[in-house]
Amino acid sequence: MKQIITSLLETDLYKFSMGQAIYHQFPGYTTTWTFKCRNKDVHFTTEMVEEIRDQIRRYCELKFTEEELQYLSKIRWFKQSYVDFLRLWHPRFEDFSITADAECGLAIETTGTWLNTSMYEIPTLAIVNEVYFRMKYDYDKLMESFARRLKEKIGWLTDGKYYLSAFSEFGLRRRLSAEAQELAVKTLAETQFPTGRDADGKPLGTKFVGTSNVYLAMKYNVKPMGTMAHEWIMCVGQGNHKHNPAYSNWYAMEAWVKEYSVLNGTALTDAITTDCFLRDFNLTYATLFSGVRHDSGDPYEWGEKILEHYKKLEIDGTQKTLLFSDSLDFARADALYRHFNGRAKVAFGIGTYLANDTDENALNIVMKTTFCNGMDVAKISDTPGKGMCKNPAYVEYLQRSIDWRMNH
Image: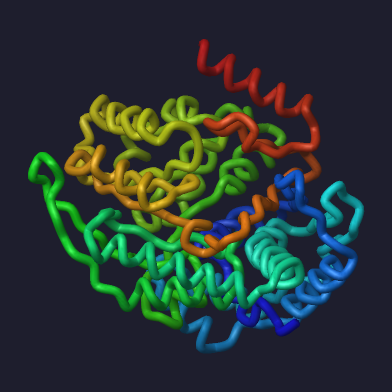
């Protein structure tokens, strides 16, 4: 099989955003990441596991080119010290453990510095997806169904059936293939979208803003999109054993503002529940961060809760962004846009629906931080079951810490 990951830019932008802050503030932190396949009916064959191992080995031989580093240098919040570090950096195959020792037939763990292991998550998931779909199915038929569905979806946008405000493609980790994701980004970047009005006469529009895939953003001259992931809140908030984990969001936002000030500011709310997040999202942070991202729980309840919080702080919600990124399709995004239109800036990050929608079901695979500095870490999101931790006792401790704080 041809090499799947051919550039170290082929990862999500937030890996670099978090990477710079890790490099400057937490260079000594260590983490363990664990792969999990949530599909109960999926099995990886011995041949698939060998191909995945070989693809990861080839990925680990890559280095940044000067052209790629120059591109990163032009993103306003990246500092030359971090870009110079990336000039020396490359993945380490020694950090990977890849075996068949799992119910699904594939077990992957990475262990090492947070600087290294954080960078492995997205390329690893992209490799696993592409190997699985190329070896399990007739790939040419899958691509035919993907292209047909993509064309139909774009027709819905150009015909004005759906309006998506500002939306980005977020599908790298769960894409069908590099070819499929590139087709989606290229087509969206070349398409002009109409405007319209809702039932109340408010203007509606659709604008393709960019992609989380930095390599494709550079190639097609669109914006690279992304700020932070759950790992940032989990590791900054729970990796220091002296921290009370119920204050994870405060520690994480404090470190983020130290690194970026008012730049690169979309806060992720649901690492230890949105209600707990709002306890720390005070006037300072709510002013400095340009918006917040939804990734679990009821999106309408979440949006109303966020807007009410801005109102209590006497902040104009219409100047803040509500970014939705949880299991979206065009119909869900259109309905959310119409609901919050005029009350906030509404934006969407759409993943699997744009990057892996075929006649076969997509994989539901993740790779999550399970240890930081030798200690368990966990998230407790607004949707039960989205967390992943090897130690139920630690999850219980984290939940008790959150409950005590919320009740006192």
